Structures are given as C-alpha cells and as structure tokens.
Amino acid sequence: MIDLHKRLDREMLEALVEVQERIDKLEFDEMLEFLVNQIIKTLKIERCSIFRVFPESEKIRLVAGEPKDGHGLDMEFFFKDLEAIREVVRSKSYLLILEPRQDERTKQSRELIYYKGINAILFIPLVVENEVAGVIVLDATGEKKTFSQEDLYFCLTLSNLVSLLLERDLVHQEREEKKTLAILGQVAAEAAHRMRNPLVPIGGFARRLAKKIQEPECREYAEIIVRETERLESILESLLRFSRQKKAKVVLSDLNEIIREAEKIIVEDLIKEKQIRIELKLSPEIPFLLVDSMEIRDVLLDILRNAVEAIEKEGVISIRSEKNENQVKIFISNTGCIDKEVIDHILDPFFTTKPGSSGLGLASVIRTLDAYGGELKVTNDVQARQASFVIKLPFS
Picture 1 (cartoon, rainbow, N blue to C red):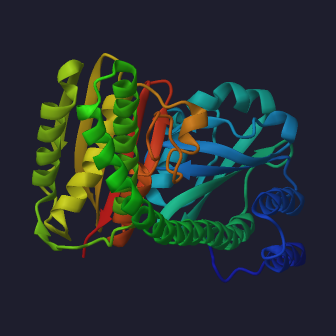
Picture 2: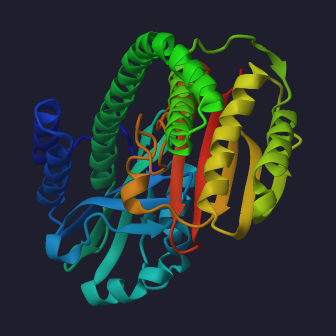
C-alpha cells in the first residue's frame, strides 16, 4: 500500500508545480514530451513511455517516449500482446512488476527486458471519465532496481494532472465537433430548402420532355437531365435528413428487436447479389431504451450499408449487442479493412469515396446518436482484416 500522506522530496514537489504551471501553456503533444522529460529527470530513470489506449479495439498507440531512438512513436500494439497493460486497463489501477524477467505478464517483451537490462516496470493508468485513456510506463534500469513508495506517490499525483490534460483535450475536441455539426446542420437545412424549389420543376419538365422527344440524341440528353436531377434530389434528401430535428418519437424500445428489423431489411434489399453471411449475437440483458426506434433503425441501416459496400463479393457481417455498466454497446463488424487514409476522415461531414454520395450518412448517424448522449467509434484491425463500428448508448 502507498502512504498517501508520505512527504515528497523537494525535487518532486518542484516538478509537480512546474507541470501544473505549464499544463495550460503547452500544446498537447508538447505537454506529453515535457511530462516524459520531467519523469525521467525527477526519478532519475532512462526509459519512460506514454501510450494512448483504445479499449474498443483493444489497442494502444505510443504517443511519447524517451529515449527516442529506443521507441517507435505512433506504433500500435494489441492488448493480447501486452498482458500487463491489459490488466492495468481492466483494473484501472497501477501495476508494479518487480521481476519482469520471470513474470508471465511480460513474456512478449522478454527480449527487450534482457537487452535493456530492465529490473522493474511501473504502469500508471490515466483515467478519464472512469475509463483508462492512457498508460504511463516507466522502466527501472541500471543501478535503479525498483520504484519506491515515494516514486509511486509522485507518479500517481502526476497521473492525475495528465488525466486532467487528456480530459481537457478530448472534451475540447468533442465540443468543437458538436459545434461544427450543429452549424453544418443549419447550413444544410437552408441550402436544401433553397435548392429544392427550382429542382422540383427542373426534374418534372425533364421527365415530360424525355417522354415527348422523338429524336434519339435529344431524348438521351433529356434522360441525362432526369438522372442527374434524381441524383441531386437524393443528395438534398441526405442534407435534409442531416439537418432534421432528432428524437422525434421517443418511447421505450427493444434495441435487440430494432437490430433484427435492420438486419432483415439489409438481407432483403442489399446482400442478395453478394455472398454475405450475417451473424447476430444479441445479449438478452439489453434493457429497453427511451429512443425513437425509426431513428435508431436508420442509424443501423446506414452503418450496415457501409459494411455491405466494403465487402466485394463474399464475407461476414457480425452484429453484437452487450450491456456494459451504464451503457449499451452495439458492435457491427465486417470482413475487410478500411484504408488508413479513409478511416482518418470517415466520420467527417461531406467526406465520401462513393461517386454521387453526399458524404453525410455517417455524419447523420453521429448527429442522431449525439441527441441521445451516445457516440460512434470506428476501429480497424489490419491483422484480422476486420473493420468495426461501435455504437454506445447510455441508459439510466
């Protein structure tokens, strides 16, 4: 146990004060670098890393570390290859491994441990909104054989400051995204209404002309106008849907039943031309939620359409629901990966790789889920060649 009343030495206190003073003055990446350097200097160690944690995909990414030539910044790792970090994420508590050369939780890193002469490893979680968003990893090497209680208290105090930094950064990013979506919704509504008025008569007259014109070339031109008008009407419908008020008819709804309805529509309408198998794994523990069932069904259909389109000829789409503390999660996974260039922008409004698409499908999904206090995450497992969309919806 750590004595939380144990006094820190002067150098540790000064380091904490300096971190507190700088936390609002540095950019996020600069702050992480500064924290790593402060830890190394204060604890007199040689190796320190900070990882960002992505629980949905069970992956971590190295975002800062020293020495730089001994770390692969931006490299990603899986929980299954780092048992110690998986334990820290699940327990939300620090972990000190005193015998890393014999400990089963470090067997995947055994070669590095011997090569660097690591005597002990300390893992400190960074907890944001009751979830582990990052982990600080410190190695004791050379003459430093372990970490004292004073070292632990310093690191835990520091982790609270870093958690505040992470929370500030994530909350700021989330607020900016919501603000942008709200503004885009207003602009989309105005643009759609203004464009629809002249578009309706254009489409109507073009259809009448296409029926009456006898000359083949002119009829072909009229038919092109009809097709392009229909494409514009489809885009306008996407704009109006994006801007529409959410939570229109909220009632207690069976989420598993909504999933089954969406799966049935997809099977009947989209996958008949492909060899796609759909697997349902629905938890019976899912509670009824106060939602507009049609809106949530549309959310699922938008994501399922993306999954179907991502599979060229044959594959598997898995739909899984589970209850997790005070929220429900829906996992929609499909065989095949999303290109890195695409996944970085896939949730951005107006981003699309499909000709003729408005790029508002997933942006509309986010707007709908946001109205219920929910969220959407996208993960990509390159090794398993699988992409997953994770929907989170809270319940009380």
